[in-house]
Length: 360
Image (cartoon, rainbow, N blue to C red; front, side):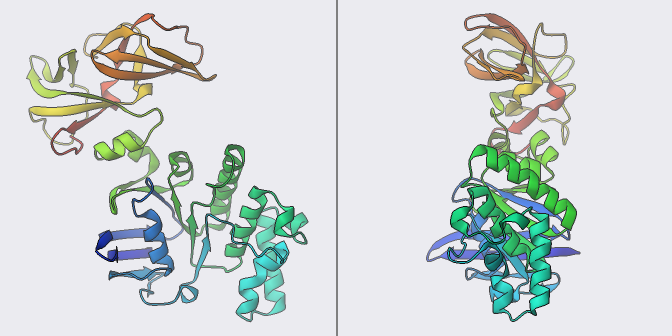
């Protein structure tokens, strides 16, 4: 049974429909990430679950309770915002306990919950400090601790790490993962950062224009994107997209372009292959530099740019007229204007219908 269930949800602002007939189930103890670019509707969905905005239609259930028209305080949620939203004149302890004090919780219960949250987030030495005396990462941990003190049914995170520098984001990302493992709580997390999504999520819901494009575990979203939008959105460097057509060859189906033919005998088709215009998507790490073997498909080209990044090297070349990005080992010895041969790992590629954009 879903711990959080969204049924046929609609949200509109005037004539603008942001979410239309959206359905989503989040399992108990699951870490679900809502991923998408700005304006895709992910924060709107989170705020609708939290009760921070009025919905136009649909229903929302938390732990089996219909909370569609309940106030945020009645939904048994804990929420962490992008901005820390701490009271500057209160200490860390005061900020973390504020919600409990306004609810009239017993003093010993407040002390117990604050101490427990402070231990989980390594805030014990900071309890008497004020926000102005804390770093950005420490302030965000206080904001998370304030949510944990509520002992909520579900915790909602609205891009909580986006205001931090890269090093702090990486550190707090690890802390959040540890926290989820330790608590086993249901968490819904909004971000536009695909690294956060891939490392934190049990499942990722990729959104575009108010629609969930794919809902699946990170490995499935990355390895078997459902459509062209997901394929292009996930991955850095982006997936290589090669236009051509699927046709029947003497040795089975093949992908034909003006620049060569790629055998598809090893490609895992969802349904029997149909001839027609298509797009072949290949991740940069699924292209091997070296001689093309029979049955692989590939080509050769001149190196345009080389990015040496330590553990890996990114090589930019071309497949005929199509730009091609290759991720190789860090010790690869190539330079600009070198001629290289490469081969595609078709078994790990993605093939999409050009008209539908859906995975074949």
